[in-house]
Length: 261
Ligand code: ADP
Image (cartoon, rainbow, N blue to C red):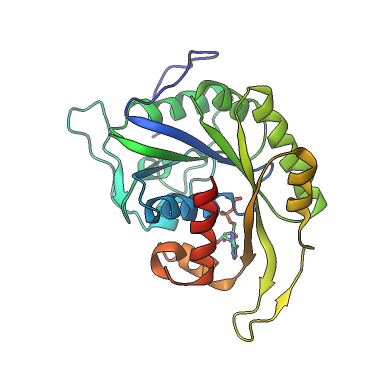
């Protein structure tokens, strides 16, 4: 079942010894491709030569088991600390490795915070240049607490180009600013559709909205990722595009964004 863990309410700052930088990947709402982006950016950081880790903090809908093809359970040498599971050179941890994927997560805020705290503190992350945290979607209390308590070096916000998604992205930005976490920039996902057959480009959700928004809000625009079948299929098969098609334009786009973070 779910990790026990006491409810910590306010609590102190969560530092992770050995980890130089913790970077949150966040979105104002679900379904914009936050997790896909977090995984590929973490792999992009690793491809750029950094020692990187990935924490799936999206505990309502953990996607790392599927996206990284992890079926094994994390081991513990001493019955207290969990060993992260290594995939494609990344040290990874997800609540989905521990609880069954079909178990509904109906935890309340404080339990979410304490589960996340455990995944940060009670995992032998070791020495890492950067730990990417795939945040739960939205800007509620759980997210705010997390942004406040984890010693974040910065946050990356993922948005699609539609106005409605950008409104939520703005809320995400406001949340990080409220707790004085630097926003490293905005990524526009599903920026345009690339037909896998003919290569034709269609701007289904409009295009460029996130760049304009970033300019307006005074934060860097980190880059755009198209909506492409390969990104979805590689993710679903447990071999994200940055490692399964490292020479593709999409993999390069993720690596470039990772380089700008
Ligand atoms: P979120 O974490 O924001 O809920 P996910 O990363 O789980 O979103 O993505 C939702 C769905 O969209 C997944 O099936 C994923 O494979 C797909 N997806 C995300 N980004 C892209 C993209 N750029 N091109 C194609 N499919 C994508």
